[in-house]
Amino acid sequence: MTISTKTYAAPITYVESSQIVVCPDGSMVSVWQSNVDDSSSIQTSVYDRNQWSTPEAISVAEQYSFNLKLIKDSQGNVVVGWLGLDINQAIYVLCVATKSFGDVWSVPVVLSSRDKQVQSFSFNSDTVAGKGTFSVIWTEIDNATGDISILSSIYTVGGSWSPEVQIN
Image (tube, rainbow, N blue to C red):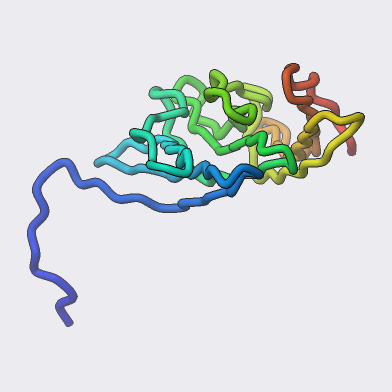
């Protein structure tokens, strides 16, 4: 059975894993994985209740980025996380970027160890003492020993991510 006989010109581009959140003022933040040939990046656009901004990459250019997750708190602060292939180590690392309500995206941060493979992660958000607080939990495997660790980190809007804490 032939599905398609169409020939596509390079570069071959496709999008997947698109996600969107609506902020309290009605603005929206969208993120997606953009794939061009053999590279992948996390892209974003913001709707200001009038029009969508020009898409921009928020992931590190040297990484193959995928498996993104987007979360917001009740105040419209946003965090996006994804797995990035660390080219130097040939392992998957956990990357995050933050966007305070009405502000621009932060520079991406690698939360996980650079010598262990991240298998999965998840987020939660809440308001603590009037500030947006995000937590992330992830699992890492030590490829040399096979040991699995469960780690966490916390981010308070306007601050930075806490050092990772092993919880198992």
